Image 1 (cartoon, rainbow, N blue to C red):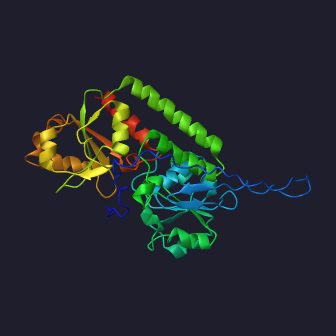
Image 2: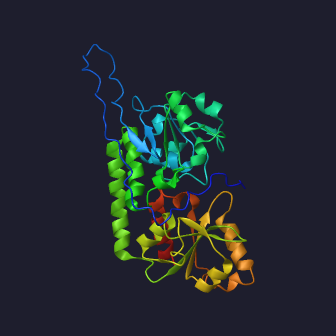
Length: 333
């Protein structure tokens, strides 16, 4: 069992308004016309994206991308850009079955974070991370130092080190992250199609509200003091799409620590268990069943458990999958 190294995205204070994550919109002048004898066409014109107070401006379309967290990897795979991946690292659980085959064709640099030297050996032109820890000394190094080497970098906007740069978590901002990477990778058509597909799926499930009337505890982990899905992040986004009531929606941020006394008082109808390599859903279930107080919770007595992979719970390309998984497990009864 691995120790969880990347922390979950920082809680999002309620005082921060929705900010559109600026897509860069400065397409540079394309190279001159080509003749039949002039050789292969050059890479597409470069673009610029504003990201966490940093400018992402690769000179040409990146062809040697390194992704340092599962969320980053899965967005690139979802865009069909596995051939542009020079390497990847750090899974929290299994890659989605939808992209598992493509993932097998990508070099894995390390089980967790590779060293900066190992990253540079791959001669990347873009490094992508889901957590700020990807751009520290224990991994790729700071983004300014990568710029000096001519290496562009992109960090999930939900993990910006400066809280003022972190957008409110919404389906629009989740999709904008996809669209920004699609722009950088010259995969805009694929990005548009992916977002359109996800929106159609959400509209269909929202229309049915399969969890309407159910109170839900989203338990990420922790036995002494439970960490739960709060009112401003991926869990809330997913539960809203299902029509469920989050028993801790009044807590600020994406995740929050609370007490088991508060859980007992809430007595949820359903418990969503986050399954991660360092803290499995099976371990969580055993804890709830064995605890002399918690085993009397309605959801525990009725075995009302639903499991979702950790990678579907943080803001990203798999949040819609979490909605689908819960919807399917509710239907199975």
